[in-house]
Image (cartoon, rainbow, N blue to C red; front, side, top):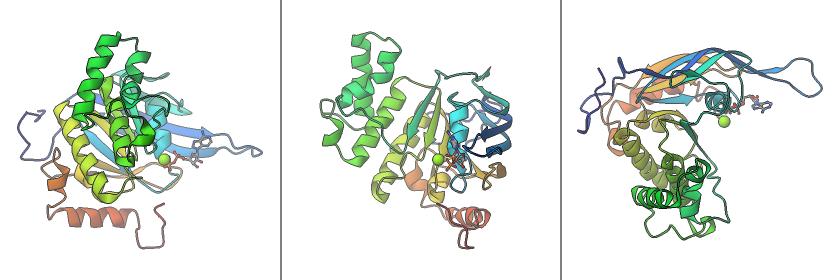
Length: 278
Ligand SMILES: Nc1ncnc2c1ncn2[C@@H]1O[C@H](COP(=O)(O)OP(=O)(O)O)[C@@H](O)[C@H]1O
Ligand SMILES: [Mg+2]
């Protein structure tokens, strides 16, 4: 049973019988290499299933195909083999119910923060009054009240990522693909943004696939962690984060069980055994 309630959860989130939201079936992605007959195999025979309302993190060495995975999930790249399904439909092109957030905020420098937040709504053809009220609500939710008329260059890195988050959520996507969204932020700003994101994802019952290099971030934010091998990337381990407080990563970080879980991830990633994580 789906255990989501308005109350803070006492146990770990159990997606259980909720419907499948994202599915990769035997997905391989090859890229042609200039001047070579052999292509690069970025992702090899990858299967994954994510249920509605789950937050799943992916960790793995650099270049193992994590971003490629998200690009296939959102329909930007077509798999060379296999199938990707989102929301019960096979992905064959850009998917509307998906929103992306990246390490770079990608805000348009010539648009105000408010107008950046409205961008996706504009593309969807929503009327001006509706765009304005959604933007206003998102500014509040993302703690940017009073900054709607500022331009990106006037904001700190953390605030720009808040604006990027507001833009990502403004179109109310059911699925979020987050590609290392906080990796350029300082440690404390990162923790505060993690908290805001976790609360919003929880309240709005979003499904998210979250790529990170930060093992504690993965544990603090997610229901499950998938560990990928070096290229050609495939999933080598799946860890259920059997901890409470998924809607409160600041508190979850303080739990004693974090240490052993982080240790397990370090072993899987061979951290400290001469394998570079970056
Ligand atoms: N558009 C592309 N064209 C050619 N090769 C690519 C392209 N995108 C990714 N790759 C290659 O696929 C592999 C996986 O890349 P990527 O998914 O970005 O890894 P990660 O996000 O895990 O660091 C890398 O070897 C990369 O060079
Ligand atoms: Mg990447």
